[in-house]
Length: 191
Image 1 (spheres, rainbow, N blue to C red):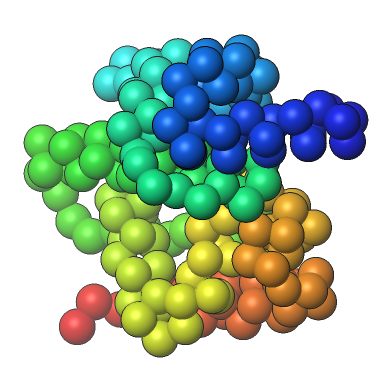
Image 2 (image 1 turned 180 degrees about the vertical axis):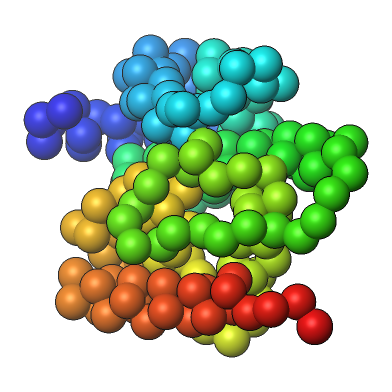
């Protein structure tokens, strides 16, 4: 998307937030493909027989997004970050349903070396990661948000810095520290 299209998307987001239904109608085709890309990334390598399909994930997230009111959309990256967060919650709910339907032990290991496809993380691992991320948010909300945006949202360093209104160096530092903290939490022996 070029700068003019990005500005137009931001304008439509702001108009929609002010209650302009026509802006939402014009916005939908502009953001739909990016929402599909985010969902596809989340769903990549999901096992056969999954309970939710990519298109259903996009539609469920979209329905949740249009129900939100009084959001001051800063820019399109903000919208896509929130969209990724909504998709994460939907997938987490699905993972919890699958995990409670199964018998078995504790969570496995989650590799945070790279920004992986979220779908490669199994249900129990996703739940363990969410619990650790919630603990991190209680200690340092920004670091938790960096993990959320990069790991779940697939945002790069520059986009994450824009959403959080911090420098790219801050994002990189938070990313390294938060990953180290999460690794320690996730690899602890259950006690």
